[in-house]
Figure (cartoon, rainbow, N blue to C red):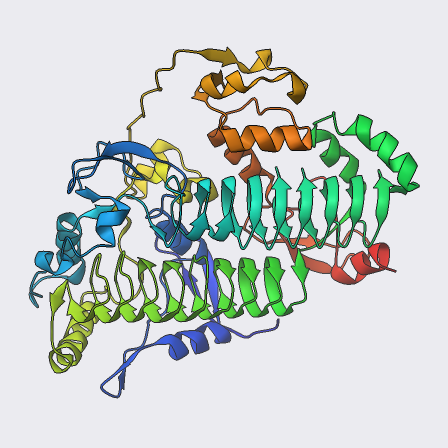
Length: 562
């Protein structure tokens, strides 16, 4: 993907130099809204792509849940807001009902005050929602998800059934303890999986089935401890066996749970510079069936994407976004967009909406500006209803004021986030020490959830190695994590899954397991490196000091496919 450098800028946050390409300028021009036949151009960004994303992620909390009270019904609920947060919290049922009206919190726009000052005042007034979980059934302990059935502790996921302890699980069924899984079924302890069936302890594989401990394999079936294999069956350590020989060895090897062993075995095998499949004109990593993607990570079935991550299912014309599930067309500087967005800018966690700018937690809306928590509304500003004529006359005035105040350029200030940086997805992607976060004007949370009181506990090292020796009484006990020392429980569905697949019980708390899986993924940053075979320059997420052998696409294809 060749492009002309138009301008070089210095980030106002980290002071590193970054470049703007002609395609960036063209995309900003394409996305800029037109109101009353006048285009309100988006100015060039002042933050580098990393700092821009980091600020947006400081608003998003995915995988922490707390117990607190619904301020509307008084009932105990599960929420992503810890009990010390000062906001009113409504549970999911209240949010979707007519029992409250977000317009009651509306304020009148004051042209003498900065936009973000007024937006922050509105943000303090409007109740928050315990979790964001639309159109789901028996999946109360999930957040930033939709269309789930019988799921538990699943986050940032969609269209799943019978999935447990997962993150970014899309269009899948019967998935346990896995992250970034799409179109798959019967998956356990796996990372970056696409179109799989019955796979355990695998990473970066496609179109495989009935296998365990695979790395970067494609079209493989009934394989164990294999790396870089394609269209193979009955292989162990990349060596082919008869079906009978394979089964005999498999019965012994599956008892040896050791991810480190797979990594060490994989080191002599070359890695491709990036995990890019069936895509055209793309730069980034983990990009499948997409076109015209620049600096994209985890992008599936999308087109015209720049500086964005986690884009699934027909995302088009999006720039500087952290999203999850389409279709979405024309979005800039937004997070958690999905289910039919069009022309949405600087917004967070809004679902099928069009022509929305600087809006949070809205659903089914159109032509809204600076609104929070609205459902099925149009022509609203700061949660106040206007006529179409009034709306189209006032919005240009607001934008002109924002341009004069240097506010018409990017997402909300990080100080407006509901969460401490250490709670958010930002900490997972861009870890900061306490002092670093404070210096960069991020919020901080010091709340520690109390350790649950349990009557019966069991140390993790006391668990039987053989799942057949585990009785149903384990459902009434809490296991003490061998890393964090926090208690966690085994639920009935888990136990049935472990027994069916002859798996050991986990020894670590779900939070620890999630953190370890996230650490297995490649950094979402490209580095300059040379192909270890032909020495051509490549851009890859494998930094030069790492021990892996990295090839360019041509050398990798010759090694693996030819």
